[in-house]
Amino acid sequence: MYRVLHLKNNVYLVYPEKTDDEKQELSLKKNPFLLFQLDKRRIQTGAIRGVILELNSRHLEPVEVFRGVPYAAPPAGPLRFRPPQPPLPWPGTRLADTFGAACPQKYPDVSNRTAALLSMPKGRYQYLKKLVPLLVNQVESDHSLTIYDGYGYDPPPGSAGFNHE
Image (cartoon, rainbow, N blue to C red):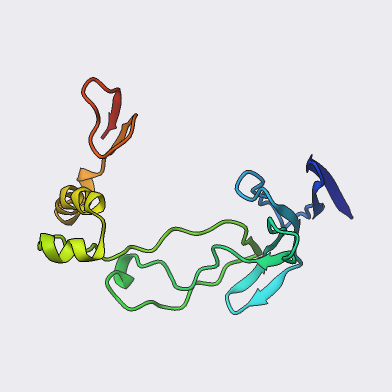
């Protein structure tokens, strides 16, 4: 049995009714072109269910999408600073409709200004010059969030800011 939900002009969401073992919600806000859920697919670590996306072009066919499927076990505890290990199996069916967490990236070298400006714009260099020392020397208790309104890298004088620590 399928349900149909009209989202906007000529865009419909068609999806199977949930069964007892499927408690995860569809992420409509994150997938505005979601057409319908795929049937389950089995991989080594468990069952996954992707989605079919309608691309924003009349020349392209809808595509099957599986997002956020783990490629490795979380690097926590004894696995920290070790080569990736196979992902852990999961029970039931995992809904693969949203991206997982981004992998950490190596920070660009900003110690040599001339060399750095060969590979990045000046604005990015200035931003990283301020940011990298904070990231390299931080400890677990140093996490904070600062939000500025306005544009640019530095808040204009008198701008409203919010700092949460």
